[in-house]
Image (cartoon, rainbow, N blue to C red; front, side, top):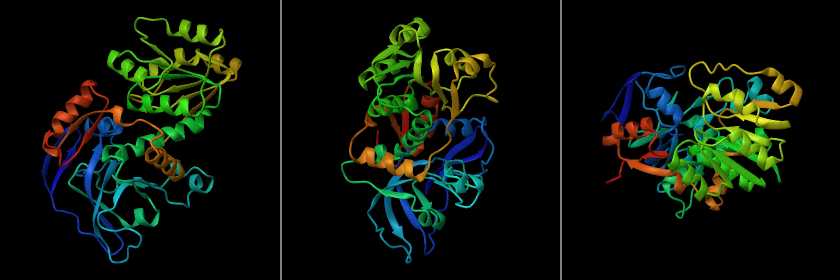
Length: 349
């Protein structure tokens, strides 16, 4: 089968490898759509190496069709359209036992310990089946929407940590795929006003199309003045940083109201070190938190939202490529010209 094989940082190419052979408790998925994540890009460029195997096949935002079923598998059949929750918690570490399975200390994942979705087929190992990490999707949900259930579930985890509630004024910093998902989730949670800050015109236009109340170009407009005007000088109730630029953290904290929350959602560049004025947090009693991965409950909730067409993911997908053109997809992601780029093995262009 064809697959994109990562042999070392900055060393990857599409080649033929052995098609996986399933065991009695496993499933083989014919990949229909795998989206490229920002984490994938950090792995491909060598900015993220921890937990990465060489050689391996990465890609963890996966949706496909079951083509082989092990003899011990029940409730799943050939032809089922499924999305994959790629993260498998251990269920027994301190994090899992205290309700934070998303931060499992021993978690495994498809696209890391197990080969991922940038291939024609992906093996769904027994550990995934035991954890109930597959979700059936109906015919009226596209495979690309199914692939985006995974990042949407991460955003749901972030929204829960941020505590967005009815009547809040929310600021989203960054209108990439993640920022656009957060923006829609904040609206669904009952936010009174959602402000989106984004320097790229195409992304601001998309944010406006998907329901942002106020869209700001921070390179030409005074974001602080706009936030303060909108909030009567108080500041935003919730701020989601959906862009990983450490230099923006300090100025962003100053846009938060007393007692508000700033969620540092994005993975930050380099070591993530940032100089901040801690008195901003201290005197304003600002809650600052992060967000990692998702819990299975988040994934199931994300899947239900997609199945019920409560959120628009189609608008977030801007480019599609097949496996042979993975290098082109990589360049589009690297340039930032698109939003979500997906790899579809059967895509004809």
